[in-house]
Length: 248
Ligand SMILES: [Fe+2]
Ligand SMILES: [Fe+2]
Image (cartoon, rainbow, N blue to C red; front, top):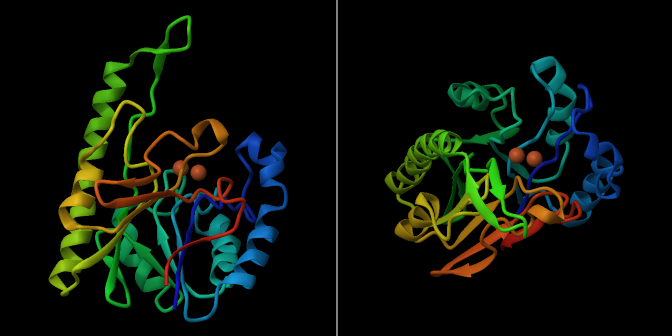
């Protein structure tokens, strides 16, 4: 029984592909088929696959249906986290999605997923992504204060959802946690954040995040060990569409 994670499938079997880079970039060529094959080679029926957000470009149920079918047909138990592009997943719809896909897919938000004696907890998260101003040498010289304030409010709301997820697991008797975010846990201005502090507070062994696409973004946030927590980026193009084993 192993746990694997990957994010940002950005499927579009039933919808228009909106990201030009996804059409032209070598890393994205035929990524659905490569990912399917990598999962079949790695993941068994008792394993769990956590998909860390940005599942589908679809805007509604009809456009998402073939993408959901593709995900359902992947091996193992599938747990889905909400990404910023997941238009099908209004924050208030999580319970309805869990009822609709019961026994097939689990949607992780304000709740937790039991993996042996460990609880998988998580939320979409958020971080400030600019606009930033650079000086002539390309160094960070300032940023949009209003956008930063807006981002801070979204961070606060997501932190509440994450705490709800931890508390639901704790009330159910769990003491071991692995924490998932779609967004990176820190913005490029930060060394820590409400999310990293919460991981430390609850003693989460690992923080797994996605969202960062393209080599220039792969080092936006923490990678490796920090204050006893191991941080991993699992966006699909970073992993070249091979799910990362998180734990046995
Ligand atoms: Fe993405
Ligand atoms: Fe994203």
